[in-house]
Length: 294
Image (cartoon, rainbow, N blue to C red; front, side, top):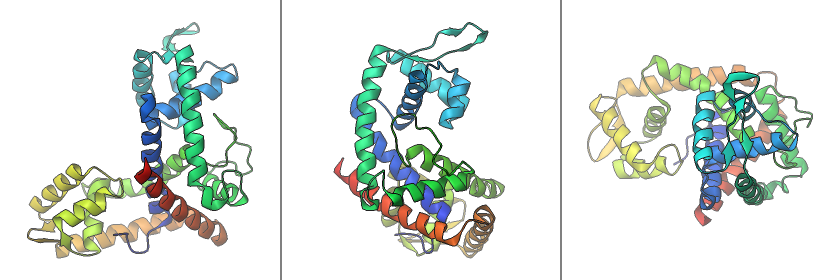
């Protein structure tokens, strides 16, 4: 069941999750995850330019946390895909470079993901279409980036990709995370509570519905349902519902999140936001279709 009147931020987040899941499935035969692919693809673009980045510099390019980049780099080093020689200018740092095997793997992965990207944007006319370019410009505007097309891709000439979606999703989601932290909730808690608030359902139906959105695996969703029921936020029984206090909480959080979203999107032309929503809906639907075929 889809949420009623979803915000643009929620759609960006959903699209990001579905894109990430699709990439994960696409590069899994090569022994990679979405995060490892993102790091290798970015490193490839830098190496082509003659740059051997430090882990912190690579973190800045990928938008990932430095600690996460460090863990990914160590795993890729153990897999024989990257090297991590000491930085001659800073003994506390390391520089990253691709091995010959790393070049082979990421070249194949980029080809696979490029094809996936074409499939995801087919309804917009493909990656080079005017519709996709407009979508990218809207996302870059939301991110505060230069929407003129001057951004240089790490892998291939493309209008918009997973990194754009992930950054936009992280930026918008951070607003909601701040509100949830005040209530002692995490994002999965909120999705569960809001889904139930939209209509009481049997537990199995709720688990299936929420797990299908890629928020969390079914076993995690079921655990959250049990925890929220024990905490008195949900009612127990054949049909799960929210308590009156929880319904008030969800409505308050939704109103506060909407107000934050209004401030986030203030000043952006309505036509741009409408175009972004149409594109997000289309790509989200296509991601689901492609995921089912993988």
